Image (cartoon, rainbow, N blue to C red; front, side):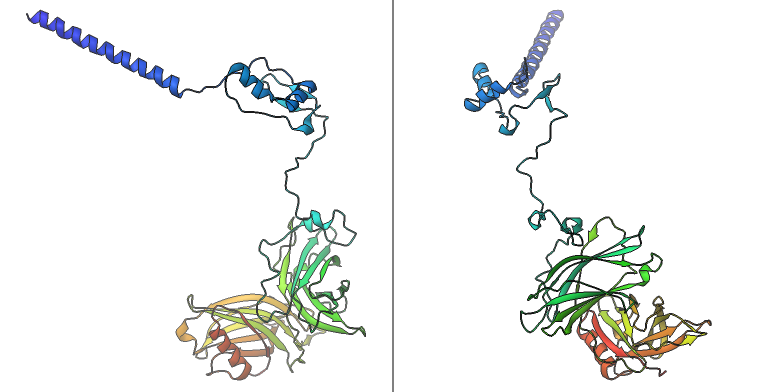
Length: 420
């Protein structure tokens, strides 16, 4: 009995395994039939002739004819009319490439350059806008309160020929009593005040477009010691010039050898028409960040400096910025020295750590010193700004305005003195 029961059990197990294998095989066959790719190999691919292409255009497309013959759906393909009659070279896999001696035809849907509307030819001395990288944001409408104008320009230096190429592009938002403004721009390469280059005069406009190139010959060794000054004038009926504003652009921190000419814009500033004080004047900006506890000083420029000659040679001058607290020296920093002008341009920024609780006891001293043979420079002038404890008048006003406008740069001129 036991042998018989074992045989029956073995038969049942074998039948179950056979059914399981058959089920698995049927499942995979069904899955392959339902989900497998339904691609059809295209046979007998031949080069289309001009007559066949015309027949396709007049009647149905080649793909639709093939679909009717085979009964299968396919993606339609139509040869563009501009390529009718072309000679094609066949490949083994049925693809087509254009013949090498056939000229390239640009597609009609490609976007045109934004400079196409400005004309394709430019006279000698004018600017080709396609060579410039314009800023993405629009700065022709976003003018702050009190703005007297904004100028756009580009600067490039050619080291092989030692030429500084200045591209004057445009000026916007000039402030004048009427629309009959006739503006032009003078460009100086400071410290040379005698030589300048001048743009053409534009008639009756507050938003002149110049697009002119100018060249200054300057050595690469002294390039970064020079400063560009743009002065915008209006010329009246009797040929008198009226200054509308100016921009000072030092070259020492600029990379002038880039491949692309980056367009730069600056807001015009009013010229300080007041005569310089006895020892000269200095212009600088102050800013205080209460969140970071940081005092920032931007030393801009000076004018009317009384240099002293040493053995017949005028030594360069620099600005020393010192932070004091309760008349105790904290830290000092100094600019690079500028030579050869009574109106030096520095344009250097310094930061000092200063807690908000120290604002009523701290002060800032800016001294112009002339290099001498000794270790200590010769003092040419000095100004101190700070709270009521140390200053009065314009210096106190500058300090208080800085505190009332946190994180903003507040710019002012100050007279220099020799007092200790």
